[in-house]
Image (cartoon, rainbow, N blue to C red; front, side, top):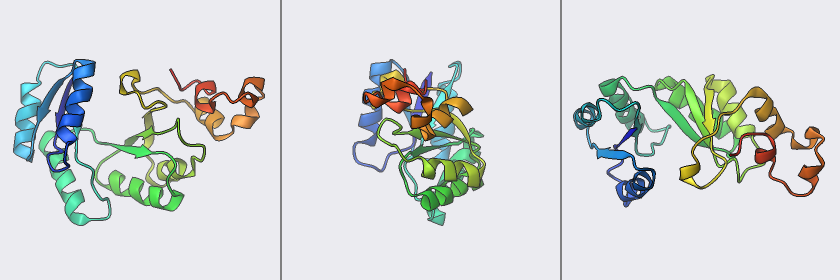
Length: 181
């Protein structure tokens, strides 16, 4: 696996990602422009997968979204939205639609370990027609992402309906739903 970051503007962004990729023993490249991104992806030719990390963008600023679209066009990458759970439903729906308009067809949902209200995530998926590509249920990056099915999503939405006495003892509904490792 190889990783390229285009996040050269946020203070400490490259260093933070470098720390994660070192722990995971993953090759990291950096790129500041679409042409540098193409060169970095070419350098990672032969890897089973190459992930491109972009800088955070404001989905409501045309300049941010144009820059993101330029990166996507340069590589033909399959973009996906990384959306933290727990946000306002209407805001999340608007964000999801903005990223779908930029070419995203899938999303990864993070912070499920910290969230009990999933309305924002569901609104984003419904409005933008983004599919779930995986979920994060732990702050530990080395634990990776987990798949999510319709059944495990339903269990997250309605943990009390699980009829499992362990949930009354304070067990994490995400773990009980089968999405936590």
